Length: 186
Image (tube, rainbow, N blue to C red; front, side, top):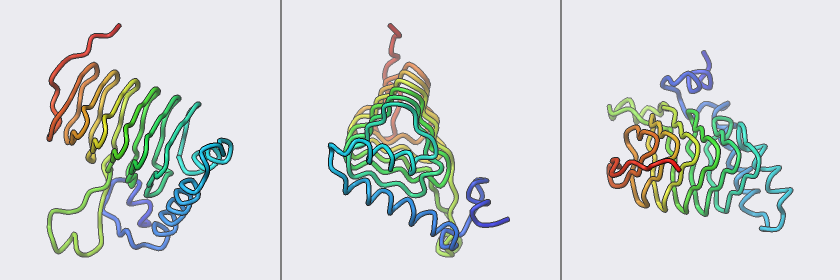
């Protein structure tokens, strides 16, 4: 099994592997190209996003400065909006439904490292998927950790750190984020 296959299977993999490094460089270069575009270069911006994301629905809007580790594991539905300075560490799938609003400086971190220092220092890591439903709003500075599932019709309050699953129809806030209110559907 190659290191890339291990990564895609959620197993420990060597992130310095040449195939993995090449995929990372490709994503970083696409991010750099995107971040260098003008706001009115809408066709060029969408072309780059569609090359960067593994899948992307209709009407995407992504502000600068986006940072993505690989891209092929990043998927978003229709009406995806990511504001300034967002980070997507997608060594495992990061999947968003439709109608997603992400405020500035949010991070989605599907990557994880071994707790054992010797193993961690050997240059291996692993990923756990992040899955987000539809109609979700992330306030400014939210951080979502590996392995988290967030339901649909959810608001995550600014500055929250999401370390466990959040059910649909919820307002969650804090560090660690916890549900503080159910949101009634209209």
